[in-house]
Image 1 (cartoon, rainbow, N blue to C red):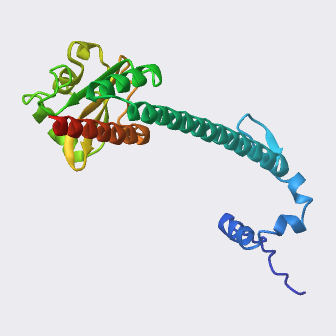
Image 2: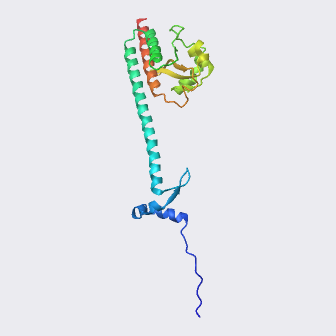
Image 3: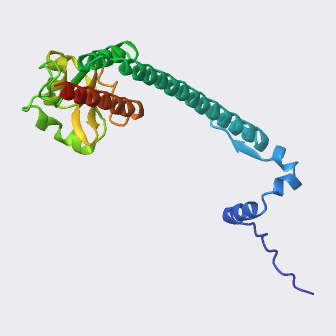
Length: 232
């Protein structure tokens, strides 16, 4: 009588082997379409769905994300267009300003009316300007780091800086933006925008527009200051 060998259990591939196979044969389900309706995947809401239903759901989620992202990009483009228009208007206005006082007044008016800035301060390093717009010698050290950085800073700023640019309104300012004004390599002054809200000006916010505004304002101030010196 012949002895029979014990029946061996079939060996199944490991999860890793199946994954490796599918990664290597990405067209597997194209050749076995029927499997897509047979395979079931757990759903976060409970129960199970077919692989096709799961793929459709993922595509819908991705589509919603892309639509939201597109809407954000469109709104950002519109905002950039509005900012560009404001900058153009201010450029035209400053070109027709008859003096330094007019430059400062027109800039502050434009920032309040068009950008809805609650508080606007412009302080100049030039000691020959009136005390209303002068950055005093005592206050200048508070802005040394700002001039050294050479770019705008935003957020909840130190009290000495707020008092120097906003004076009696300093206590009402929750957050602010400071822009160093520099023309031809020379320190011209400081432009400040303030808000009662502590969240309006954030440290990580974009400052593209205000940077160009600062360059424009600094050049306008320099031109009128030079003209005043020549007419002396």
